[in-house]
Length: 195
Picture 1 (spheres, rainbow, N blue to C red):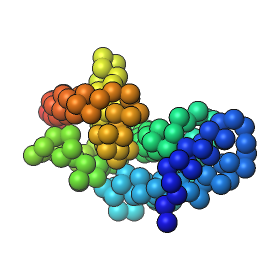
Picture 2 (cartoon, rainbow, N blue to C red):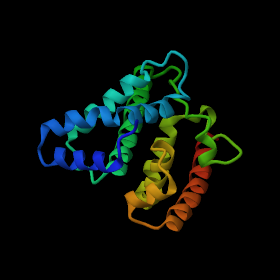
Picture 3 (spheres, helix red, strand yellow):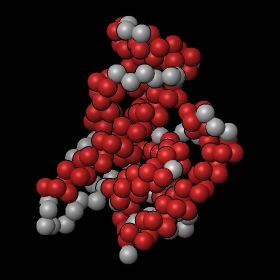
Picture 4 (cartoon, rainbow, N blue to C red):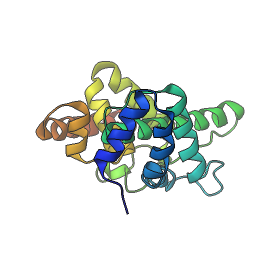
């Protein structure tokens, strides 16, 4: 049975205040949701990928613990977990690309269900290259950080429009508008990059 969001938020605050026992109580409460996020990230990866779902959860969780981030609440915690999972996958893809300089790059593909979330009716890029998407999101963040963050929260974090609005402290309509504009920009940018 899932723990109430208020319990997670309470434990996050206790952990931030320096209670190490809070982290021990928090871990089992958030583990299944972290695995769901990781499965979402890993679903579109190639067969035989070096990183498995559990390893992705552990790597992202360890980075969160090491960074000692100050989480505001449960939604913020999972948004940060999604961002760190994205970073883990992009870092791994870049390591593989660097190891194979001069040869074919390893392409980590996006979840097939997520591709239409950015570009309805077509692929983002050939193979759904997560590194290309990451570069495009970084470019978008350079001139419109909120739109990039909306995409990250929805695409990588699986947050609802309402939850993304809570994290960003904007209205439901603003999140929808930002998402629509960001999807159009990313679709154009990624299709131009694939040409």
